[in-house]
Amino acid sequence: MDEKEKINIIKQIQDSKIQLCVSFSGAGFQFLNDILKLEGASKCLLNADIPYSKESLNQNFQIYEPFITRDNTKKLAMSSLNKFSKNISTNIIISIGCMGSLKTYYKKKGDEKAWIYFLTSDKQEYCFYLEFYRDIEKPLTREFQDELINGMIMTNLHQFINNNYKFSTQTSSELKTIKVGSEDIATIYSNPSE
Image 1 (cartoon, one colour):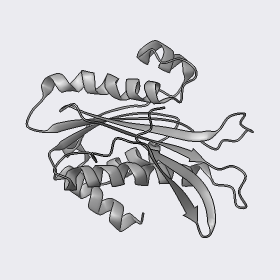
Image 2 (cartoon, rainbow, N blue to C red):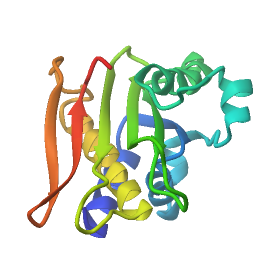
Image 3 (tube, helix red, strand yellow):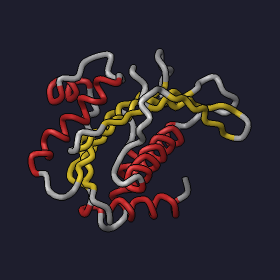
Image 4 (spheres, one colour):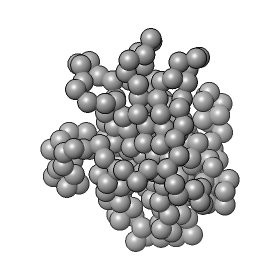
């Protein structure tokens, strides 16, 4: 997604009936950066939590290992939604939870992956899971992985607004492979059960 597309989507979010709460741990930070660098963020951003350490997740959110799961990401999103949904106005609050394990400076034992969970004040839910491939010709950078997550969050918010403030009615798990050039780099699972 290029900068012009991102700016257009952010302006659409700012001018819409939604207000955002974000809770990100390990991934999703490029989305927050893009929202904050454009003037007018206060029109759409209610709150941002960034529990990054194991201790913060344990103590403040009652989230324990294994951290990067569908249920933990939903719990992270629910925490913000619960804080702000009592102040419901004519706007729809969307709480976005994102938990990820992206490329880092040391060799990881586990997968490079991320869960993203959307919860709304009018009781809608939608999630997706990204699994990044590691054995590829040109390894992905952490920045590229987070930008892909950013693009997915923005695309889903754009579609939500354009679909009269509704997520896709699709309930089954659908998967899509992402390519760069001719090489598969990741798989996205839409609304997986786990």
